[in-house]
Image (cartoon, rainbow, N blue to C red; front, side, top):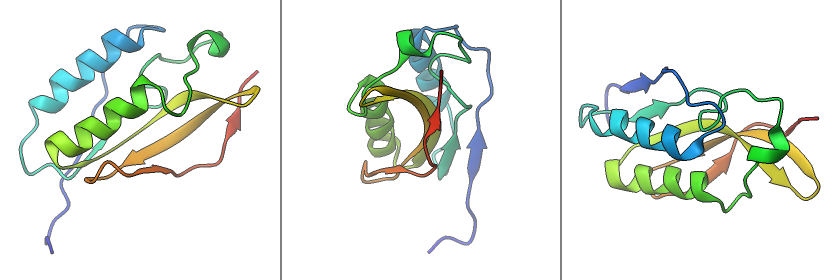
Length: 115
């Protein structure tokens, strides 16, 4: 068991409503982190920034962002967390997700319904 937990928060300018560019930018930053990083904390709505058009950017739970979080967790052997806009049935919500080393996904906050 480790004596210390190494946590890195990444705050950066976002490309508004552009998940592809945002994921690429975060992956570049994550790849430059020290190997002893245990947990990466990403900003709220890190793939899109805050938007008044949540229906246009909502992903399904098995979408690209969740797959990317799981891939990063395994590749870098760390935990990673951030919130994204999700389509859940007919609702659009934000959820905070945590992916741990084995790519297991945990939804750790209750749904926040968006208009």
